[in-house]
Length: 179
Image 1 (cartoon, rainbow, N blue to C red):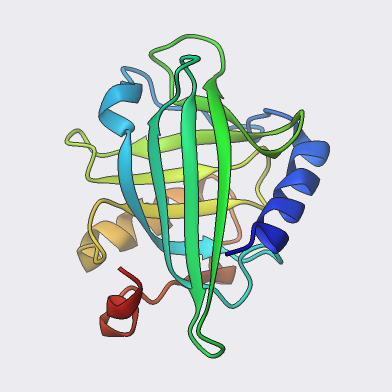
Image 2: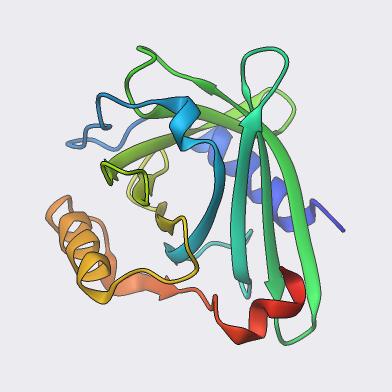
């Protein structure tokens, strides 16, 4: 499996924004990194070259020995049946109880990872990169209740993200061979 496009683009993201937070947004407080660890399914995203054509996308977060977070992102191009896996690392930014991390998939280059909304039970999250070009809707399950999805999109729209450009990610039966 390759890091290729995913890693390359995240380097660009890191160079472009460091560990920034989009203007006019705030990361969640009362955040627990330990509760956030584990597997997340990508429900929707603003598309970028590093994820272009990928479905069945998941992110797995676990503790590193140095106190950071090991990040494993996986996705599949269902047309070509090619999997893409990238391993990175993340570290908290600022206060430990605020949902802000810096993520790197290549060398010393980091990008902002900002949790803008989070379910009390850590069942779903709305995550932004360093600016409004990067947005993800994540869930602990492959499907998110339609009303919850709509509410998250409305929240993102209120924060001036280009929600009309969101791509919904296939997480259904086509993903079964890759799970």
